[in-house]
Length: 387
Ligand SMILES: Cc1cc2nc3c(=O)[nH]c(=O)nc-3n(C[C@H](O)[C@H](O)[C@H](O)COP(=O)(O)OP(=O)(O)OC[C@H]3O[C@@H](n4cnc5c(N)ncnc54)[C@H](O)[C@@H]3O)c2cc1C
Image (cartoon, rainbow, N blue to C red; front, side):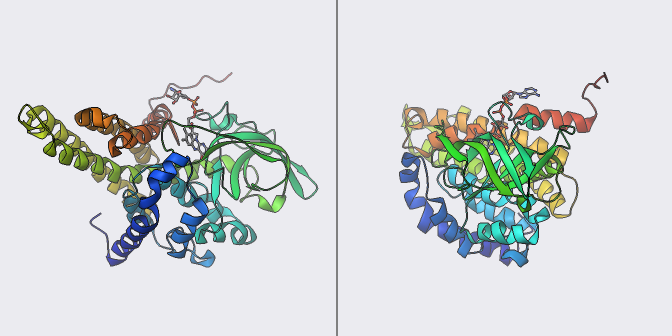
């Protein structure tokens, strides 16, 4: 971004050093193992201050504005897979924003500080087997009992959950309206009654651990409530906005790398006596994709500036979230075609980008859900009749 200062560049240099030395040499091994050592990797990032760039200094963060986080997220694009950036994003921008904003001092000391140092791994539990897009329809409930909550239910498709130390879980805490009956509660993953039921096999993002988790009479102290009881749905909607912005920013460098790698490959590989790139259909198409990426980048930078200035980004970030998923599909699919048979092989980066990138139109708000938000803001949704 053109507003980057020396500090932004320093953050990127630090991130890239860790990626080069402690992450990329092991990515293929971790992809095969279907898991990466989150505690080990997060500790390295935490020691360098990279897990708390915008978190309060009071709890060990750097207290910087969002543009500095963008610099770090851009650098994450140098990682040779999407799984590990996603796991880091869960820790910094998906599981911990509400905790940092609304958590009590005691809760932040116990759970936010170690997430910033990388000593504890966090996960975010919203989705359930029957309710992903329709968040308000979740069934997991937390009932008050003495000084505790007793939690029953379960969560589905939870990133980091196989190794997480705690989950920030959205639970129903009353019979009120479905938008005012929810609360965010921190559940230690070693609490009795928490069962890591199933590690899920996926089409992509292989190095990331994704799990199904059950709660059977799990007892946690009521002080593990984040902010106010009943405000969880609103907190989660705010937190989703940061998740979506993270997703939008994290897409850019992957898209660019995909085009760059394809230009390089098609320049080297010859068919019918000339480089594949020399065919107009190929270089024109790659130019069209580059135009799309440039437009996307400009809009993303506008959204980042608005967010950093405290402006409402709901409409813009939802539009960008849709565009990021669609572009990811278009760019990876088109580029893979130009790699031919090699593109279909596991050993080439494009095949991993193609598999990993498919998640962008589904996770953290499917395209259609985002379109619903945009239409709501445009005032084009049909008006619901009151019964
Ligand atoms: C790899 C991975 C990691 C994930 N990590 C996490 C995590 O860490 N924490 C977490 O809580 N969740 C996580 N999720 C869950 C994810 O957020 C949900 O999968 C997503 O929100 C979609 O919900 P769903 O799968 O239930 O799809 P559904 O809600 O069943 O929807 C299925 C499809 O129907 C369409 N659709 C849905 N609603 C509408 C509508 N109103 N109008 C038109 N079409 C519609 C969309 O195309 C959608 O893709 C993860 C998922 C994956 C695959």
